[in-house]
Amino acid sequence: MTATIPLHAPKFAGNEWAYVKACLDSGWVSSAGPMVDQFERAVADYVGARYAVATVNGTAALHIALKVAGVGPDDEVLAPTLTFVSPVNAIRYCGAHPVLMDADPGSWEMDPAKTADFFAKECVWRNGSLWNRATGRRVVAVLPVHILGHPVDMDPILDLAQKYQLLVVEDAAESLGARYKGQPVGSLGPLTCFSFNGNKIVTAGGGGMIVTNDRLLAERARHLTTQARTHPSEYIHDEVGYNYRMPNLNAALGLAQIEQAEVFVEAKRYIATEYRTAFAEMDGVRFMPEMPWARSIFWLNTILIDQLKRDSDRARLIEALVRRGVQVRPLWRPMHQLAIHRRVQPYRIETADQLYQRSVSLPSSPGLLQDEIDYIVAAVKALLRELGFSGGQ
Ligand SMILES: *Cc1c(COP(=O)(O)O)cnc(C)c1O
Image (cartoon, rainbow, N blue to C red; front, side, top):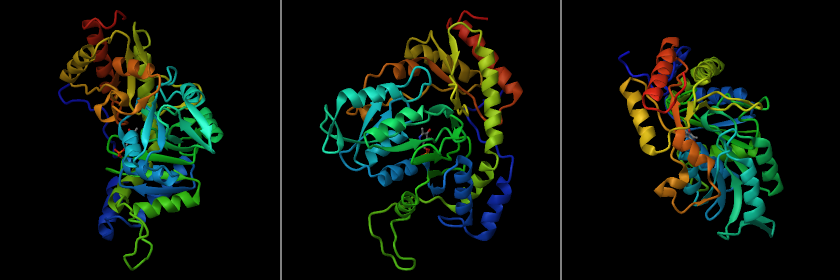
């Protein structure tokens, strides 16, 4: 094999060319147009939400969702430390302070038990608000991130939010199509954000979406993403808004892609089954979890290798695989380890650091061919043995 197998490439097998052409033919290519409305409708229907507001990317969706939820300067928002940086940055855009939670050893998602502990042991309830004892700041929201295609255990998080009157904004950028206890991610909490970046399961080239069942929240999100303009023909604005709307051209691509979402989910679940089976018998190697209450979409298929004890071990393995044409990646460096978020408060983090240390994500494109899967499995197994990271078959 000569060409590199990418970590996650999009697949265009539906109406992509037709819809993009129709969009160009119509002349509506920018940040308004019928494709945006249709794409919003299609995503809302797919995830079981009443309203959807398309944005220019997933990070912008998170920024606006947090603002709509009422997060402001000096507030605190709980988020997982094991995540792509976007949600933690979005909290900072609001002038608010993230508090970082550990990963659950079972699901790898934000740990609801430690989250409950944090509230019970580190916070006090005073004047109708929850205050973080260590910082003296008000805790106002929780931002669970459904990482790697698998849902967070949401019931305990939603219960805690109700108990302490906290807002919940979910980051489902990696988990479009995932289900929690049979319910689609996007229909669980009050505000959920998606991304349609090129490496996500459904792409619009770039884009994001906020979904909600609350009409007022949706209207407010739409207002903030369109420069907070109040008059249809005059340039009158009632607050400092944002130019965060999705262009029609991107919506055309996204609409063609969302029509194929279930096909992509099935393809990715098949790839996951192949990897799971292939690594099941290997000593010291574990495939990523799927909890009994979850349908994961296995956005990035990830394996845990017990023998990866140092950063240099993982680097050697990754380099060797890349040399053989297999693009692999470590998980994200946990947020509390990044210098940019150095002053953020971490709470009892153990599991996230271990997962980061020992995990490698494998190619997971929905269009991955059987030959490619077989080649990847053989290359990973051979190298794990060669480098002494597994003694298994
Ligand atoms: C991709 C991603 C985002 C942001 O999406 P963009 O569209 O790239 O801005 C946010 N959160 C997570 C967890 C992601 O993986």
